[in-house]
Length: 74
Image (cartoon, one colour):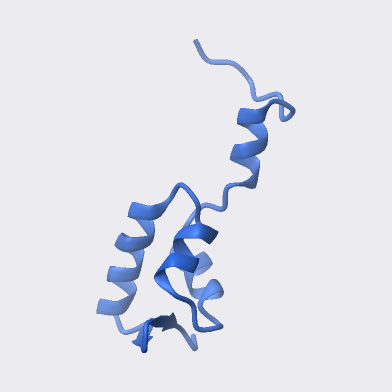
């Protein structure tokens, strides 16, 4: 059964507070060097997607990895 989101219950509030991962959201977050754990906390519930998007951006050399932190100067 599909219903409209009320925006008030715990489920709706949690969904509103979840930051969806996109390439641009990840690049924006990486303006400052950030560890993988910080990224997974920031993009809570999106851990697998964090790995997938990071892998793609590293391969394209749009993200750098140095001393345990990821960063981007794009």
